[in-house]
Structure formats: structure tokens, C-alpha cells
Image (cartoon, rainbow, N blue to C red; front, side):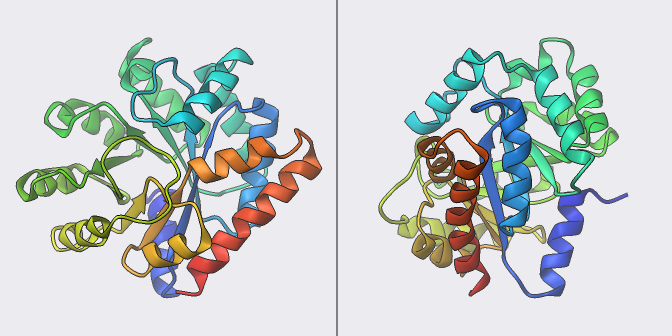
Amino acid sequence: MKTRIERRFEWLKERKRKGFIAYITAGDPTLKATAEIVLKLEDAGVDIVELGIPFSDPLADGRVNQQSAARALAGGTTLDGVLDCVAEIRKRSDIPILFYSYLNLLIARGFENTVRRIARSGTDGLLILDLPVEEATRHAATMEQHRLNNICLVAPTSPEARIRRIVRACTGFVYCVSREGVTGMQKELSPAAVSLIKTTKRMTKLPVALGFGISTPAQAQTAAKEADAIVVGSAIVDRFASEPNTSRGRTTAAAWVKTLVQAVRRV
């Protein structure tokens, strides 16, 4: 049985469209608000939602996402709460959802037990930031057993031999990182990002997404010309945090996200 992520990419391919993946931190500002935000993102045309599980030491994240995780943790967000949040979303939406997480959160109560619960909640995949492909065989097998996609990162510094190994471990799609360093908005995309997408595409038939640093409609459109999908995170997190913590504020933020989605649709 294919995951929602896999089905969505097939749907996009049939229509010759590029995908839009939106990252938000679960629990920022609250889990109830998170469920509302996901539904508003779906209404804005987002194809896949990447839910960040807040962690106290998010080494791969820049200032915006670090602060978002801190707010979520201060508000009492836990993995159990996030799973309940996804289950609530599933009562109203079938949008593909993947978790962006650090390994410690997943092994604290046993990796297999946690993966089983994640799958039962209605989540479709996992991106584990600090799990290198060289150490991931057992974890990937557990995810496959529970029909969760294993989303892996390819960095600009990855040699071709390692990219080949990474894409073989991936299911669902491959996530290319547009630059070295942590998440965060940037003024322009690195020329190396286009080269990385092309290199990765030569090595896999899976869809290839590009993320880290995309923050404007122009950047989204440029990235989508080469990638099968783009991922926007910090800019979306920042926009929702900048608006009032109300349903109207979240509607305003989602309307801005729609401008990025529309830019991608024009490719």
C-alpha cells in the first residue's frame, strides 16, 4: 500500500505539476492552533505538511525554528500531544504529513514502539535529522515495516558515492538541502543547489525536493524549475508567528503562503 506522500507525488506527476511542502513546528503556538494551521495550509494549496517535533537541542535549525521549538516546549508540547494532534487532523483531512525529528525523541520509549504509534496516528513519513545513512539500516527497516516513508537529506557537501547510498535508503522522496549549515531564510538561492538537484536526479527515480532557505515567491519559482517539489520552513514559521494568535491571524499567514504556492504552480 502506498503512503499519502507517494500518492501525492504520483498525482502531481500526472498533472505535470511541482509540489509544495510546508514546514511548521508542532505546538507553536499550541497544538490546537497547529491543527488549524495544517487545515489552512491545505486550503492554500500546500501538498505535504512537514511537522517539526519540538526538541530542546535542535542542532540543524536556525534562529527562527529554534525559537519556534522553544515556544512549543514552553507551552507543554510533547510527542504524545503531537500524535493526538495528527489524529485530530485526520478526522478532517487526508493531507500527507511527515515528521521532522531528532533521533533522541524517537528512541526514548523504544524506536519500534514509537514508530508504530506514529504510523497509527496517520503520519506518513519520518525525516530524522541526526541519523546518518551509515547507521540507519535497522531504523529504516522498522519504518518500512510500519509503512512510513524514510526521508533522507542530501547536502551540498555530500560526495557522489554517498548520495548514491542515501537515495537507495530513501522512500517517498529525496530531500536536497540548498546550502551548508542550518535552516533559515536567505536572500538568494545558492547556485550549488541547482547542481545538487541535477546530480541527485541522475541517481534516483524518486521525486527530489529542495529546501532550506527558500523564503520568497521568486525563490520558490526558481527552485521549482529544477526540483520536483520545494520545502519552505522558516519563512512560514516566521510569518505565522508574526501574525496575531487568532484564527484571523492564521488566515492572513496562510494567504501569504498561498502566494508561494501559486509561484510554484506557474512553473
